[in-house]
Length: 529
Ligand code: G4P
Image (cartoon, rainbow, N blue to C red):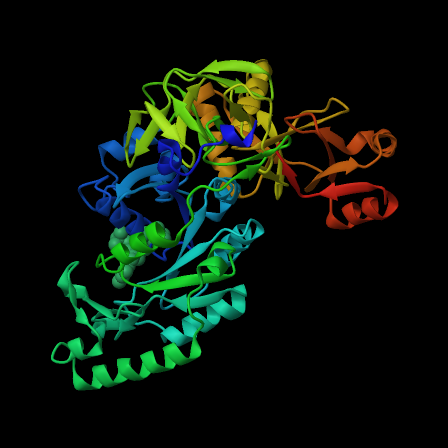
């Protein structure tokens, strides 16, 4: 393609792309992600009533009836997307499961965002899961906006929290707002750039500009305290730098209370003003610019039976460039098949709607019958593929015990389908012994058992196997790999894509194999292709 064929910033397409903000929320369970999501959606007009995201009522049930487990345990397993508009921006919020047993899903979802919001509980600071998810973001230098939540509760000193971000995450932290009091005395925030004051009970209207405006609104004591803190903050903390934020080295920090709906608008404004619009992405053939006219996209998530009335399978597709129009034909580059995009869908909280058109940065759901897999690239005809939707080595390996041996064929098909969805990984030993399933967390096994029963009528149990570790194996030289595989036939298996995996019973055995076969690479993460 020539440069002239690329859309210039003036084109309507480039304008559409520029107003997209595709992001996810990362946090430790209980920090307030669900509450914040609700409030964000309210601002965007996507939902009218707070409580719908978590509501256990009818609509919620429709969405994930097959996952009774999710309801029973009050955890969110489903990763989906919520689209809403605010100001002149279109926000795509990619939801991620809160429970760490489903972290693989979360990691994959993070490959499809341009920025992330890190929610921190003001009393707890950086917690384990936040740190882990942050590290995943750092792998791709995803810019992060930090929201210190629950300021209306007893909380830590703001300086201490900022310091913790800097030291534990090695990330510069620059407050954009400063809290006026905390806990029961949390009165509002002071915006450092503009001096604008917002009060918790003051709605969206600013209570004034400059600290003077606080006189009469808070006690003398509080005013003196905030004045001192602000002086200290302005003297000691790094000024905000857009480039540094965009490169993932600095996080702007906002204080608020999702529950009181305070600071949420500031957060949306920060995303609109500072967070990047969709950026270009490298493919195996060439760099792809987000605003170029040719459509490209990749599948980062497959979800079965979102709606029990239509036993469908939805592939969640992130558009990387150009425009998708309903009815267009797309090339699935893995198989060279052409797929008609007759019913691409947008998701608005609990609802979905047919998408007539979508632009780079948008996420659409494409109903299909098992054709689309995680990691697939779709284009408008060009033969290129995106890399980088990873698979992670499972932490738990089990054999599936089938109650009715006559149903072995059905089980094979079911496992294949679930592996394609990314629910489990399936490893087929090359010596022909029964397949093993691999998961990251034990809850995934429960989900699998439940779904095998509900959707395929299969009663299964799980058995320990002699294996506990799996690593993908590869080598620069094909002969080295062949020699290794020959020598280790009894403990190698193939994954869904036919790639070789070594299975061992312990970390010790794995490191012995590594020492012995120095020309073979053992990895615990694999790009899907
Ligand atoms: P999560 O999705 O990150 O797990 O957190 P979630 O929003 O479910 O919030 C966890 C708990 O923290 C909830 O209380 C929620 O109401 C509370 N919470 C969230 N944001 C704030 C805030 O800004 N201030 C205060 N004080 N509390 C907040 P819960 O009692 O566990 O659940 P619920 O019965 O209220 O739903």
